[in-house]
Image 1: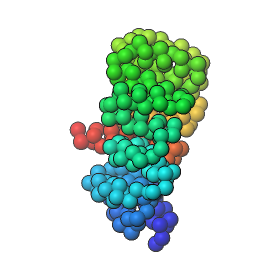
Image 2: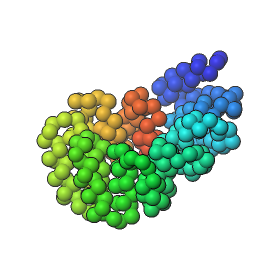
Image 3: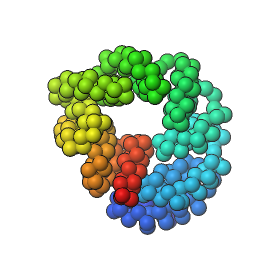
Image 4: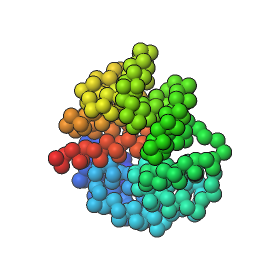
Length: 279
């Protein structure tokens, strides 16, 4: 069968939770396309999805030896590797690229993910214009460095966006600064708007506070208003894992992947599921 037919068959097996069969098909597809970095990246993503950590490194190694010469395709590979959590490999892929804002954004994400928070801040400072996602990363880096007043000030300024991403950054900054009461106050006030973002933010705070039951309830309320709310699906997945409801968590991961293929939350939830299943 050709590549498109193979991908369709793999996708069906993943949907049917025939992960062992899917893994064999993925490895066969990868072996037949060792000079196609974009397809190899897809294979890496699918291996992570089915939990095949044994074969993932070998396919990743082939991918890294066939990185595209074209800057845009190389960037796409790097961005995919960031989503998969292969940060050192992503850094290698990004290394020769010209420092455009999107390349700097990716480098900063890698640096923060590897615990090099000062470097991440320096990289962000080199960007021509910081978007919301960049400022959220700045909040996270500042908080990780213990510079909580700066992190909270930046997050407070972001609140004018009045969306889930900015609210989540603010809650995270407050909790990291041991100001959970203020985080709860904000989450409750935001929930009074009775929209999907507000309920999703209350779910996120509940999860951070260790209340997986409330997390599930508020996430469900958000999803009733917006069934593809990524933040609500993500937090629902985290809370489900905490409760041992692995099937529900995997359903949430699948819904995220359907809405936004390759979203890092998918791989985080599935990794948490695998760890929980080992207990």
